Length: 462
Image 1 (cartoon, rainbow, N blue to C red):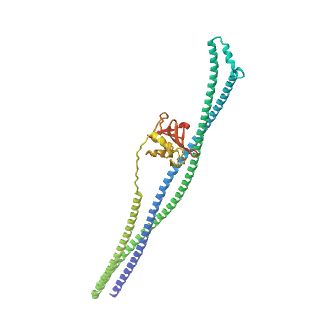
Image 2 (cartoon, rainbow, N blue to C red; image 1 turned 180 degrees about the horizontal axis):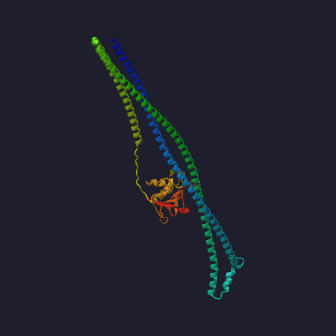
Image 3 (cartoon, one colour; image 1 turned 90 degrees about the vertical axis):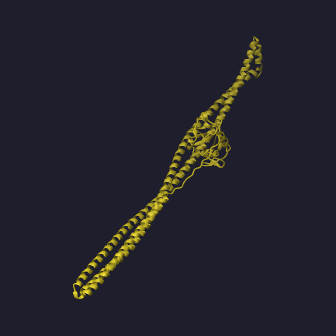
């Protein structure tokens, strides 16, 4: 009986020790699991934040690339306009050279005609020959013959005076043409200079934007590297969590096995004790006590395992809920958008009113990129600002202005029409004249020949 009692106590002690070890292991495992889940949650939050940054950077890159593409397109157009202006300047120089030749020829003809006239006058009226007409009259055979001779002398004089007047008029017109062509050539050269400045500015802006793009590339690479680190941490902690859960499950299984073995050993001890009839009551009591203790311990261990498992499940659920909430918040933030509103203006006015209003600003400065009628505007900015006064919104682009309103032909030109050239625009004011922001050297001015350059489009708003 003493032997079986001792054996029962030993079994209970071993079972209790196993349970204590299992419980301690599960508690340590629960702490490690909680730490792993906490680190994973922090990594997931960090990854969400970095992914948001990556999205912002990519969005800014996309916007910046669109700006670079627009600048590239404008640069190409500017270069093409410079080439067109160079051709037009060459044509103007040829016209100027021809006009100078015509002027020289007219001046020579005028001088020749004048000398011929002087010779005839000198022959007829100078050095005593002034009586030639009188002698001619005396030699007339009849009154009609005398009249014919007088008419002949008058015709010669009138012819000389008419020819001289015509050549003088030709010289004056040619001189005016030369002055006009020279002015147009100077205007084209000014516009060429402005386009060269614009080209240089565009190249500088493109270089700056490209540098910004390089900075974004570096930021994006850094953010992507940080995202990879967070992903690695999440993967590591996920594996650690799996290992801890497996360890806890193994500890729980070991505790359950120990409890089962304890119950089996207690049952065997109770059976052996009951066979001893003389100590039946004592053995039964001892065995019962041991069984009760073992059951209590097993129950306690069972409760501990269940509690630990519940804690793990709760922690995992909390982490999952936190991640889900973070993802939902990020999604909500990403989908948030602002509304935009547009305003409309009442269009009023007429083409003549536009022309009259535009002429008020003649003499004001030319400023590339400007839209101020008083402080400075470029050609398209001038047209835009003038029409804005009448409630019309136009683009600040000479190319885009080719498609506003509706097209009209040169034969149907009216004041207020927009005259479009390659890289330049003006407002027609009537009588073949235009008002436009010409160049830095001339500012806003009136030119009296709207066709001084090749017209590519005529658009009417009113």
